[in-house]
Each structure stands twice: as structure tokens, then as C-alpha cells.
Amino acid sequence: MSAATLAAETARRLREAASLNATLAWSEEALEAEAALAESVPAGPLSGQAVAIKDNIVTTVLPTTCGSRILEGYRSPYDATAVRRIRAAGGIIAAKTNLDEFAMGSSTENSAYGRVRHPLDPERVPGGSSGGSAALVAAGVVRSALGSETGGSVRQPAAFCGITGIKPSYGRVSRFGLVAFGSSLDCISTFGVTVEDAATLLAAVSGHDPLDATSRAVAPLELPAHRDDLAGLVIGIPEEYFPEDLDAGVRAGSDRVIARITELGATVRRVSLPNTRYAVPAYYIVNPAEAAANLARYDGVRYGVRRIGPEGDVRALYRATRGEGFGPEVRRRILVGTFALSAGYADQYYGQAQAARQRIIADFAAVFASGVDLIFSPTTPTPVFGAGAKSADPVQMYLADIFAPPVPMDLPIKVLAPECLAGIPAMSIPVGRSEGLPIGGQLTAPDMGEASMIAAARVLEAAIDPAAEVR
Ligand code: GLN
Image (tube, rainbow, N blue to C red; front, side, top):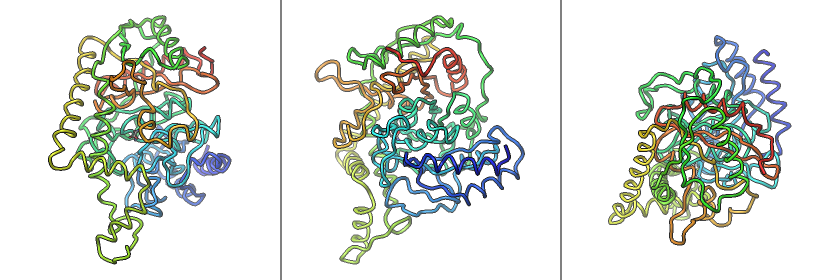
């Protein structure tokens, strides 16, 4: 298919999918310009593909709003490195996708531009915060898309939408042009209809970038050779991710995969990640602290929208711009983060959270050092939830991807945050359906272990029918 035909096809599909509210910007002119660019580069791994981009990744051709009023109409003077690499690999940029404001959320209901609908049921959420990208891939508008993970924002919507989502090792993909949220956690991550789609996009955008000081000095990811089975691998099953009150459908889906893992020749080993219980409390200190610092730049002077307060001085300008420009979840994180970093409290909160983070990192290191190659678990503890089900209560939303505490006074366990706190790669693949809605299974690998994780995910993908009811 020529790039011009691809652009026209993509425009038609985007129009048909409009009711999902998954996009924040796209245009026929922009698609035509992308097609012209694609004709001018040599054929590459993304030739013939349109890729959707989460709207916290900057582009010059379309605006970047982060789902926030404060950046309404903002247009970046440069393209993110990942966007430049997609074009260099032959791909075209399809659209900017809707997200929870500044990527804060788990349902894509926090966008200032309206919620995203689940492609299989408009009354349900697609997950978040990268819900727009996930919905477009699941609806078949594009084969792959960029999202971002700070604490699960690609794996969780991938699980909810029945597609693949890969969060790479921290530093594997340049953050240059990814709007900063929690800088020690943020990773550009990929969605695909299949494992191959998500992995191909990840490989194309990976590799060292001198423009990002935290980018790792390693060669771009090479896609692994095909494996027939899982022979020789040891796959760890962490007991903390399978509490007694785990949703029955989610449990059935994971049990089915674990049985297949054994049939496919791998050794299954029960393992423990005892500090998983500290992941949610540590995450919800580290994340708001870094967010509060990063979001200080939206002051009405340098970026986006400006409101002049009644007093007309600079403080009034900050107050009016930030008060009107940020939604409630963003304001809440700035308040929590500012408090957690304030004089006299920083050691008690931020210092403690960093100590907990070190323990979580050590848990994973110990499991992998004991001879475990990969870890398998459910991606989320609950199936897809309804719009409005958790959005009224922020704490419920923070707990959206955790297991209810099995013991009173025990701290809750979050499935998605530990891998982000540890900076290690993890991915979700569809493993079946429960009451008609997708559920995901997760593979986690040691630092920079994406290739073996992807190779194993392909084997599981071929062995599991994602459309089958698991109960
Ligand atoms: N639910 C997490 C949060 O709200 C997800 C954030 C993310 O990964 N972008 O912080």
C-alpha cells in the first residue's frame, strides 16, 4: 500500500471510530504531510504503518495538550525523539490520543476533553492513562501506538482492551519530548494488536539518545529469534500477586496460562516478592513529589494558557492560570507532592518511600538472581470496570489496580507499580475473556531483558486463544 493510500485509509478509520473519543488531534492535511515524508525515506520496519501517539509526547505537526486545559492549543517547536524514529523507520503519525490529564489516572476519565470509551462497551473504561492509544489499537484503527508508563499506564489499558502492551526498561527509550510527570519512573511504552506489532514499534523507537541524560548507552533493541516453545526457561509465579480474593475470572485466566507454560516446557517456580505491599504507598509519594516539581513550569508565562487574576500581579497570574488550567486530580497530586517534599517532612515521606523502593528493587533482583528467567502474573487484579465506578473517589482510583488487603491493617498490593519503581521491563498480553471482556497476563523480565520476554510472549500468544471465555 502506498503511503498516500495508508493516509487516506487511516483518515477513514479515524472518522469511523470517532465515538470512542480516543483522539485529541488529527487531520487529513497532517496525514497527507506524513505520507509525503514517508515516501522520502527508505523502506523500514514501520513502512505501511500508521502509529498513534499519546498526547503527552510532543509533535510539531499536531498540538500537544496532555489532556489538560492548561496546554490547550499548545504546539511544540520540536518533535520527540520517538516520533522522529517512527518516521525514520517508515511509519506515519496517525493522531494524538486522549489520556488522563498529564497521565494521572487509571481509566482515561480524567481528561479535560472527555472520557474515552471501551471499544467493546461504551459504558466501560478502556483503562488508563493511555486509554486513547489502547482504544484505537483495539478498534483496529492502527496496528500500534505509543503510550507512556509511570505506574502501569500501558499494561493496564492493554489488559482491559485485549491487546499487547510493553513497558521497556527505564532508559531504553528516550524521554526527550515525553512531557515529564514522574521523571524517575517515566517510560515511553508501546501497544500492538499482536506481540509483534508492539515489539516492532518498541525496537524502532529504542536506543541511546544524547538529548536525554537518563537514556541508556545501549544499542537499539533487536527483536529476538523465534522460539518453538519455552523449554529451558524457569518462570516465577509471585505469591503476592495471587491473593485469596483475586477476581475469579482473572485467576482462571492466569491459571490457564500457568498450565500452558508447563506444557510448553518451562519450569514453573513459586516465588515471593515480599515488599510488593509497599509499592502503592511508595508510588503515591514518589510520583506526586516528582509531579509537583515537574508541573511547576506551567505558570502561564512559558506554556499554553494564561489567565490574568483580578489583582493583576504575577502571583494572581499564577493562581488564576494554575487554578483554572489544572483539573482536580492534577491539583491533588501537586498538593500531596509539595507536602511530601516540604521542610521537616521530606525525610518522613519522600525518604521513606525511596527506602521502600530500594526494597522492591532488591526483591526482584533476588528472584532473578535465584535462577528465575521471567515472572508471570495477572496484569490487573480486576476485570474492566464501568465508567464512573471509581472516579468519584480518588483513593478508589489509586487502588484500581491493587488487590484488596487480604489481612486487616496489611497494606494494599499494587500489580503495576512495582515494575515501574524497579525500572524493569514488563508486558501484558491478552489471555482470555471473563464475561465477554478481556483480561491480561503479565510477563516481567530483569533489567534490559526485553528480548527474552518478547520471545516468550510470542510463544504464549500462539498457544492461547484470547477470545476464549476462561471460566
Ligand atoms: N494509575 C497511575 C497514576 O495515576 C498510572 C500513571 C501512569 O502510568 N501514567 O499515577
